[in-house]
Image (tube, rainbow, N blue to C red; front, side):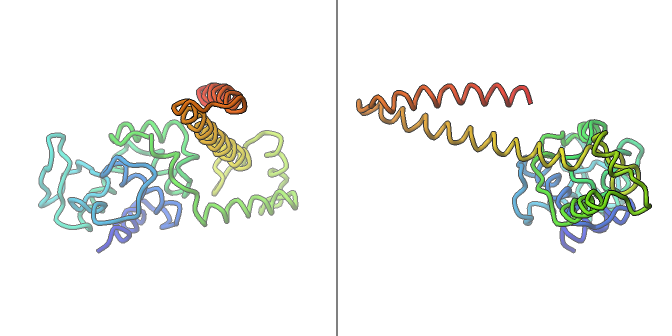
Length: 241
């Protein structure tokens, strides 16, 4: 059995689709648990350590503790999947389960689901580093088409109201989530800000290198001041975001 098979078993056990989005969610979650890394690297042998990708402490026949907090090593990935389902459905993680059932990208998980990741012990730092996948883009295409024709599949004008309210209609796959269009804009703004910061740092390093050899020209002095000011502005914007 592979890690992908384990993920499919867990998703089936909580009545969630085995979608690219949910596979990406589990990949990011596993990487944070096993490696403390985000974004996640490609799945490898590290992901099935102890037959327990998400490091649950759920007791299971034949399982043994592998650390002081009670993370288990299971006999095989099938047992690990069963134990993971039992943990997810023990009543402490309803919003995580709901997000998976809706195949909701982790970037769109709201505060309740993120808090439940703290309860699990993983934390939520990794959730904004999971890439959007093909099935999410199909959902966006579907929403765009409904916006274009001005009606939903049930014949109402609720997509037009969504433009005014910033909320999507109730029901799958929307579930009153924040506006998809706004999420796209927010993501683009973050990427643009990060790119601007990287360029400012590059410019600053070039100016500092010129100083170190005593060859700072008037143009480079101006560049140094401009780069420094840009970094201050971008850092301020990031802190306020």
